[in-house]
Image (cartoon, rainbow, N blue to C red):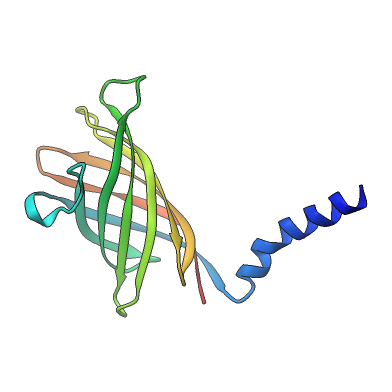
Length: 148
């Protein structure tokens, strides 16, 4: 029993020890983007966006979908994964994996979670609207980001 307790304590402590050298802060902000099509979209599933972020993160970003699957429950709702890259005003680049759901129907809502990895870590939760007629997305985010 003592060995199990020790392994559990070590396993729970590892993420905290890894983050000990980082400075974390809460972030809140907004984003807007346009749908990118044609040769400027490297997605094999054909969904890319590019735009800007402001608030806790400030700069430009791109999203490239890597997978889209029907939800099965609502015909217009799909689950997606993809890669998000944020280029901050100071030139630093923050990369993450984006997972979420999107309604491609007339309501056009979506929600996602971007998990950042590499030198900068953290997560942000996004919610927004897709305007298919205009080819734009917009919304807000909140979460935390940790830098070395």
